[in-house]
Every structure is written in structure tokens, then in C-alpha cells.
Length: 124
Image 1 (cartoon, rainbow, N blue to C red):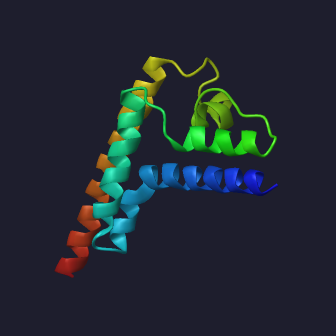
Image 2: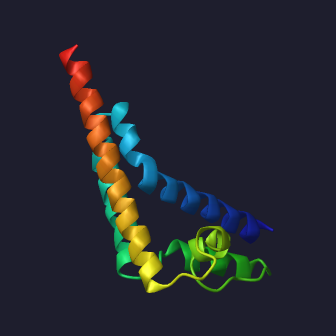
């Protein structure tokens, strides 16, 4: 049971990391040094998708599940947990490229928006 709980904690951390990679630029609204933490996370997320990498959290979760007597899953985190919703045709290299470039584009837009808001606040 302890291994299953640890695997679930890794799962939650993985999900939080993905959400932070997507929306972490918004933290700059509140914390001045947020980009110092977010940009490396963003680079990791974009790199994993563009270079078809595998996040080390996935094998860690699977190892913990196996150690706890649960069944591990094949493929990556997104593929296993949200794959059918996001890309029902499967996780192809083209889809991974689209995800990586989309992640980058969303964050360019978010950083531009936050920068305008921060600048408007400083002028007011």
C-alpha cells in the first residue's frame, strides 16, 4: 500500500509539473522571480515533446506501482492518462511536435500578456 501511495504522489507531482509548464508564466504576475523557476520547467516540457523523450517520473511511478503489486502501464504519462482525450489516433511524432510547439506558443503568448500587465501596473 505504501508503494501505491508513493506512486499516486508521483502521479500528482507529474500532473502539477505539467500544469506548471503550461501555465507557469502566470506566476510572474505575483512573483517577480517566477520565470527563473518556470523557464527551465518549460524548456524541459518542450524538449521532452520535441525530442520524443520520456520523463523520468513515468518510470518512477511504474516502478513504485510494480513494487506495490499493481500493474505498470506502457507508454508515457500523457499517453496513458489523457491520451484518448487529447489524441485518439495515438501519440505520433507529429502529435508530439505539435504539443511541444503548442506549449512553447502558449507560453510566449502568456509571457507577452503578463509583461504588458506588469508594465501597465508600473506606469499607473
